[in-house]
Length: 140
Image (cartoon, rainbow, N blue to C red; front, top):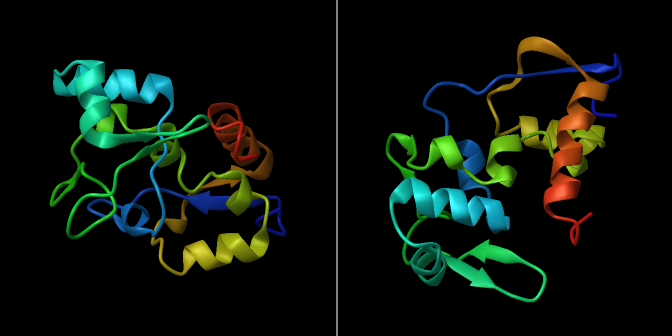
């Protein structure tokens, strides 16, 4: 577990986009693609052609040319915030972070929301993290 007391703390900090700056890929579920396309007012196929790299087992965002990890990260934050992908919405409640004290502390070194806010029971955090295993079964 991530905390010895059986609880952790986390609340997003206004204006923070540190989680969006983590090296790696942003993965989309089919529902994420559909929702983002609808939110942006484009056809699903057009959205996918422009933003998604698809393999047999995954759908991930194409890396933007130049700076950054995400096409949708703007100065004011996430430009598709109401429909952001499961991976983004659940951060930092990912199985590999919630279930491992060392990884949770490592994430806390760059995430200013960890250690702030109301206490969250580990069971509740693990329940949220289980949505990741459902959304991305090939990863967990």
